[in-house]
Length: 151
Image (cartoon, rainbow, N blue to C red; front, side, top):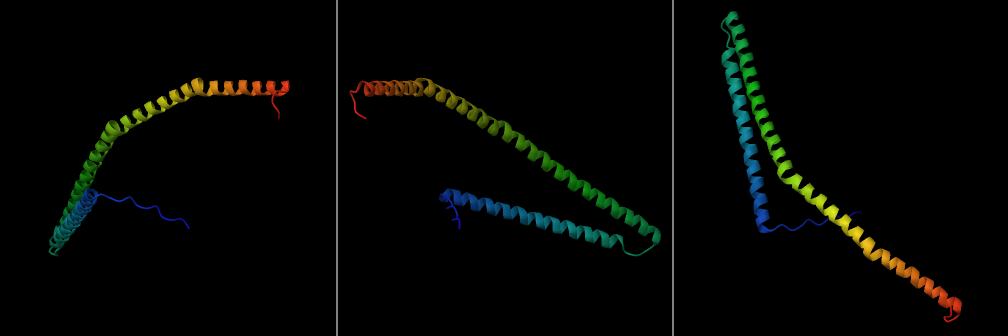
């Protein structure tokens, strides 16, 4: 059974900021629901007054008017959604240009520095140590063959 990872402790400032963000989010949701309920109540009221039975010719005109009202509301909602979408795309582009691109540039520079460090260490530390070990092994074997050192 895997143990859950411990969650990092938040500072009081971070906790307060988190609570404030949650409170703001709840407020936005509540206002959105209130707006939608008022909009729905308005639509129902308009439909009720437009569909009161009086004459058939007037009723056809009222149905046309109701349809036009729904189309206007739908166009309004689509326009608002497009505005929100454009703002979100603009903030995404801003994020990519001002935050992600510099991070990628710094990461590329770091990788290049590490590559250069690895090459430097390979040429100036590892190769001489390997050569020295080879020479010492050869010298040790020569000493063993001469009988100066016992196995």
